[in-house]
Length: 155
Image (tube, rainbow, N blue to C red; front, side):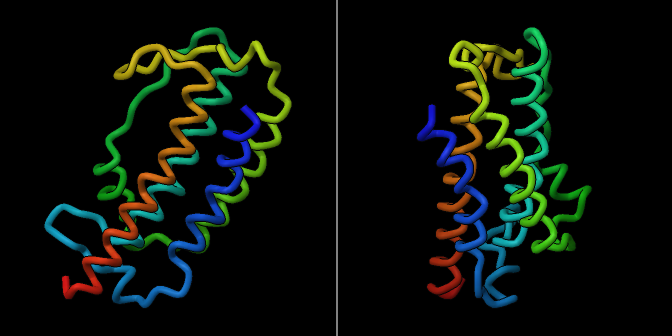
């Protein structure tokens, strides 16, 4: 699990690198109706970290707790991701990941099989959750790269 923990810890730096030095026009470019800008994608990744930490801590600390899904599009709309301060959100994600990384490094081997019950996805282990949130960043980094390519191609 150590490699997954290290990849988890590296997520904020990868996200910060992906958005570093981008023009305001590129950051706010929306490739198609209903799609997100790079700014919105980055805020979403940061905001989801609150959910990630909550779910993983529940898996560690509670016996088979219920965790709930959320509507990411509604979060983006109702929380007005377009207006969010990205630097502040990146700092929050960095802090949450640093603290959770330390917690994950102390997890006993048998605790990786502790579970939560997700109202949509069913039973998930702590291992499943960690991998999900590592790959969540990677999926959105690819989305950011697609936005960059579409912008460079003229929209």
